[in-house]
Length: 391
Image (cartoon, rainbow, N blue to C red):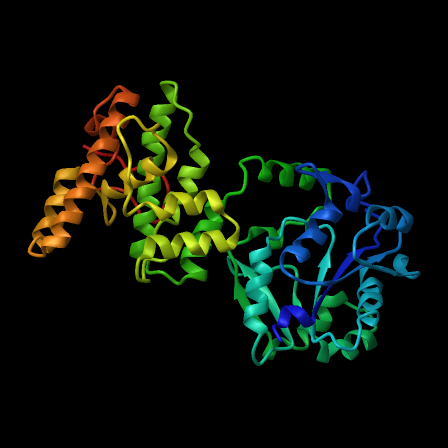
């Protein structure tokens, strides 16, 4: 039986929201209530047993969940603090549960793929606790083995859940995730404004999440990560120039997709493998761009779009060095041209890149050499994201 089928979620929504001038579970972010966001997260991850612990304004919580297959757990001791809600939720778990998430309702931007990674990490030989980790920092929700349920119930509450779980650190497991949402809580109005702003660009990985996905989750060599960052710089330069002359390219999508276009570089047919990975993570728009960064079919009359920009930028960057298309494809012919099939594929890709380059030049009103003048193949620090100075 997959672990998800015997895993529960304990969502803590019993607090006073004392630092917020509103009741946090019922606040709206991106048009949805915070409580609904967290509940839906577990539904999307395939967790059927979802228990919401309520206390303060429990009637409103119950009304908000009316019609949903969610189990309400009343915590009459909610005034004693969050740990009392943890205990109430754990005590309410049925016997068949093998593990459970504990999720404060005020951490509403965790993504489903994070839960899936935690479940995968615990599916065989589960440790007492599995933590999601972003950029070296543990976040929420931990996935807790049912075997330490009694330790949670017996704990006196000193130091909260963290202090109790620290007892099991020697055997705990940390799982890197490309999800900064595990660290973002909703305590103040400033936090609220930050979370709202975070959703404005749409469903995209942030710069930090792209870096974590490439480096920590996928474990890619620095050379591949640096190449992707340089492709992102070139992509942004091209797209921003086109947009200044009336274009309508999505700069955020271009930047995010370019940063991870080689996310599956070590796999066979890495463009499609990377697209499948991003699709599974829930980033369909990024996946569509990544899928065609190696091979793209465009007609001269097709609108210049985000996928074409990233495709061209990838062909204009060899390693971290910005090169012209002739140099890039001449090197390919020299290396693989002895194979007729490879030579045919290289010629096809060269022509597609030249067609896109011509479209970019028309849209930008400048030659590609002028557009790439800010880049110098001998300058630039791979550890920064500032554009490279060129001759």
